[in-house]
Length: 196
Image (spheres, rainbow, N blue to C red):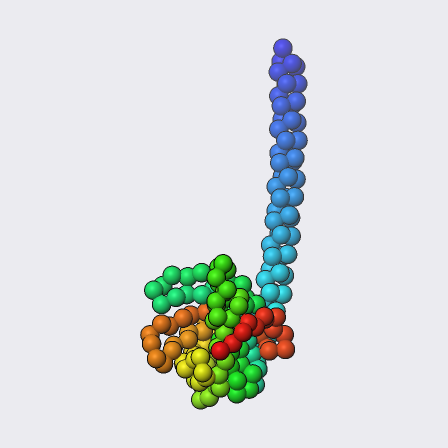
């Protein structure tokens, strides 16, 4: 009986040792997979930061050259309501001393520009640009035309080309804010409707 108990104890110790070894191997594999996933995520984050910084530098240069488009993907109205829109038909464009502001919503009504909104062209003037110590960009200019007379304020945070532009008409208080990305004019993919 003593031999049987000793043999049973030996079998149990061996089985528990094998189970512990298997658990240790599984834990090591899990840790290795986790480290590999973390390394891949860190690499992707680093690549994304490099791309964002390149887009930021291009946007700053485009603002300085007065050759840019803010392609908006969100419109915020005066009352705080917002709507997501398509970026190729909602934009603020500057080409030298000319500026265009266009909004177009997905409605059955074609609007004055033929694509569901308004397109106004004008001459731009008084452009002021400021970059703070952190790299945040503030830019403002006036747009004067037949269909528009407004102040335009652009705020772009450091590290990427995401920006917000507020259009403040001089003749009323119907401010409009567009959120989107600033891209150089030659890289823009916009569709311009009829202007007035």
